[in-house]
Image (cartoon, rainbow, N blue to C red; front, side, top):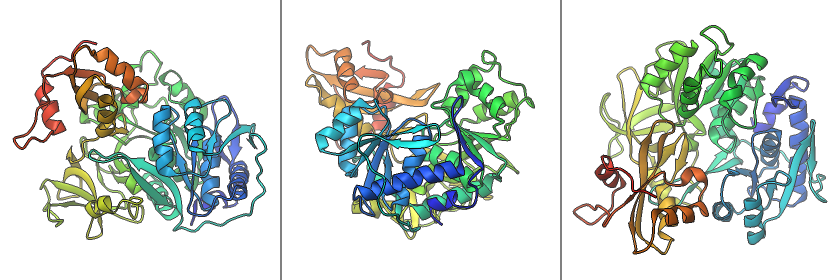
Length: 501
């Protein structure tokens, strides 16, 4: 099956997508919009296997572009609209798209980056349930039929010792993941999911959209998460589930009384799912006590088209555990690539039809990532004798801010590009709201201030990547062999107050 098949099952008049205070689109509306995009992509001579980039906020446009590009046998590459021009330029250069779809009048940074790279830009928007293209765009190209082996989605995942790696996910990967999720949570056609995750991430795209469309269910999609309207929307649209990052759930807990959150039994949520970042056991217990709905923690990665492990909806929800393999094989490997005994700490590895075949044009990364048919996640963990996974640390040093994975190498590069910075090392710091935030140690040249460096960073990085705690040092701590290790730098600063800006 391909993504097109999710919309081609005789569900034409059934509601598929509801925009709060806006339009409601049926499966047929989405199918027609996707077909328009597919013909448009074909008319512009985008060949099968090539890429088309897009940058939208949550809404019907992002789904029309995704399904349509994939139907045309091209790879859809969504980008965060919060990126700076420099970030857009980097990702666009790496993706090499033949076309960039944008909303009318927005995303100036993306337009500037595309213009600099000579990438055509086409505006795309809905008027009620009808899709429109900007300028002299045509949608009269030939129809195409994708195969399960075609790459449908192209995303990036950041590394700590290299530039972000390209992750190609096929129709087959995505359908397998969507079906796994649908089965695991018992998602039926009567389900209504409230989508609070941005759809340039695999989390919202696969769980909230694909898994629910696979069931013939309905997606309610606000433009962005707002705690103020969350419970109002849950009630108004009869939402039966939500999937989010721990930061969103902490916000709902903090604002529960202020926002008039219902008591247990006073809402329609069948379960609340947490993924993309670890959920502390205390938060899980507090959520279940306050809202009276099961809280399901899941473990996911872009390379696995999202979900790998999850706690069961019916059965033991083990606080502090990422659950068991959710129709995905999970093991713990030692340094030699052999399976460890239960309870032994090692590297978490997975395999399944949802897992990518390999990073794009990166044989070195692929050689490290795959062992004997297993994908090595880069995370440390243990498996209990009954199969529950507990994560104990990360081999990778990514900064996980509310599910947004940030490469510290990228932050390093921007900070040291300031002429007043001699050295810079970025690392994760604990944050009560976001789980983790960006910290940085700097060695400054005379006359340079922290405020100067942060102002410089603000011109090159999206706001969520800018360090919130900066430590000015005379020298960066190093190992006996002269290497810089982020965890050692972070550990040396844990009891020290950040420098003033």
